[in-house]
Image (cartoon, rainbow, N blue to C red; front, side):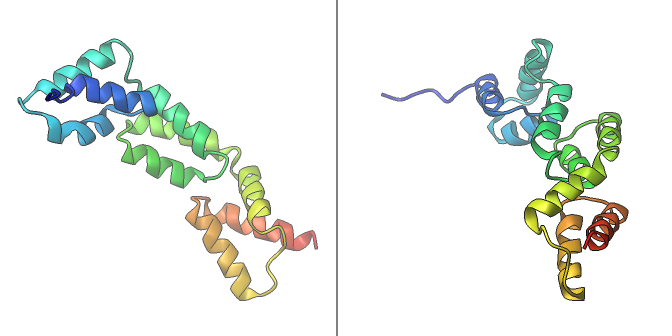
Length: 150
């Protein structure tokens, strides 16, 4: 008994049931399954018209999942990779900038908890926070704040 391959819309719905996806992500993931040119675009247009695809929900999802552990630069990069419009990225990142220092402090506390003992340790802590997408200014303030407290 042979089963028919799922339709493009069915594949898109399965992906959307797992997590929010942007239209660009769905296009990237489903392009290899498109048999007739334009059919993927039509299927995604139908899903967008029914509000199954929402850029605003993708942005909120990324912010909810990543903001507590990542800096604004890393969140910006992830949203850009998902194909979110630059204006929506700018709005999301602007809201993160206000809380960047407290979030960086919390990430630093969970990971390290003690001020760097020497230059090598300081460099390691800086690299960790920078890799998480926190700005150099915020990283310097986190390490200075914690060095001053001891």
